[in-house]
Length: 506
Image (spheres, one colour):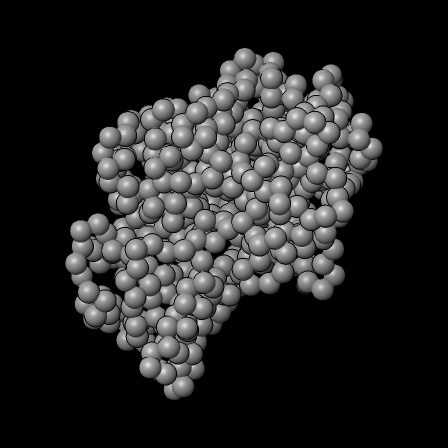
């Protein structure tokens, strides 16, 4: 970013605010596209800042955004931040009750949504709708003209992102202006990204997609925005929009790889980078991507909402990154492993960087997961190899004990997915009278494969410690995904428990 004096995250695009180059392209699932230049986008963000202030919103108040991906949402976020108003993109895949909980928790004064989610907006709040005319139309918020951004305080929130709520009530993560300006600057350092065209299909309420949108604006690059992930549309958009950089969570890529017909006819030659994160990348999935896109660099990345997306990177001595590894600690980030009793090179990751959150909004009941010396306790377990590369092992939340042995589902999934007939696997614990819990698995086979569940069970038993092998395997057409497009482990756990209880009583 050439404008080093920028302090308001809403002005992340300052260096390119007069550029006529394309900033974003809204791409409908049927391929219809609408582009906006950096200059027009900047004017829209200013107009929205003016409109919010004109409606009586004041610095520090929050607005909720409940919509599929579109550049108007990004412009609204930047406009709000310029005015010191805090945007809160809400997970639209939550049930209506949880959406209402999040909107109430953040204290939103206004909800902006699309027509698909108007019915999920809680009563009692003003609502504006994208693409609608009249008093409740989004256009009423657009007040053309220049706007001077506020200068934020060090402890002032730029935006809130809520956690997925997979294990507890969603928490509002408060992120500062300085934190995510730092993220953009670090990711841009030493490289020219202005010619990149990113493809974003992960939801904008997720750090993966939002941070990439901010990077595109800071770099003067462009991004094609799909309203939501759909494998065939994702593939077709790559060719139609000449996307150079794909970013996704691994289940999205796995679903894309199953669309054999679409992949056969698609033009994917523009892609030179694939960045996967937010979930483990198996060796087989990485190799499939490399086979499909032999000229593209495949990056296995790591980040968190609370700690930001910059944690690991290349090795300073140029050693190649192992395919399952997330890399070597970034030079601007401090990391350490807290012991879990399995040696100094295995433990829970703690990290410290300027991107760490300010805290959780309105949650005095939750301990702040930051140590006295400023390290964020991630809850993610890693192992470190002799060259200093880190590889994700599993979540402390996901780990379970079977007969006294610690089992991390991702380790067992890696073994199952090493079978040539397997596309995806998910391992979950179920109750067991003797072991306490035991592992079971749901598996998606590759197209045309005929391996049986028992053959897979025996394969895993031969490849891994006996206590890790799934006592039961179900072959399924697809794995359910949660609101962040990660595999929905909770849903599969319920499904397994129900199936086993049903079998026991039949």
